[in-house]
Length: 204
Image (cartoon, helix red, strand yellow):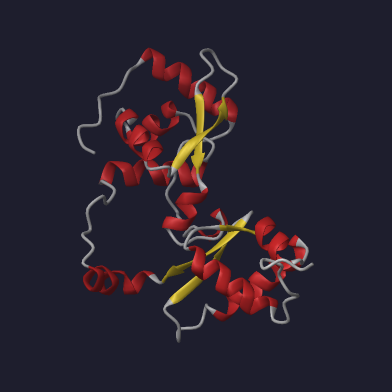
């Protein structure tokens, strides 16, 4: 006997994906879409790529973002002020300049140690790093094979969502010259940091 919750085969998979992802409001795993719709993950990703292409048009206020393991709808950045006004949302919680600097260093050079971040900025960045960890924009991704085994940090999937990126390859190009960033170079920076502590970051 067929139960009330039995799902029928979907004729328009693309529309079904749109409906599910829009209703979810959070990143929807491709695996879950595959299980519900009954189509392989590889095919689901192809459908999602076509959906994303359609939402690149200037005629819509939405973007369809694709991440390595999930996808999500979001609004286009230029409509943010109008959305906040309509929904009476305050702008509280914006990142400070110190946090933005740290986030940029991590995003463009990951994985990085705290000492590397300090070397780039010239000040102690512990407060900003901890703040970004609390906001789930960066996270520890491993440890450097060096004395004390310092943590290595990288950006998270939430970082991609917040900044409307599908992958790190979508980051704006930069001509800023930063210190070398091989693991050997970071090891040297770790040693230097222990010998010459830097001033603390005064603002965040």
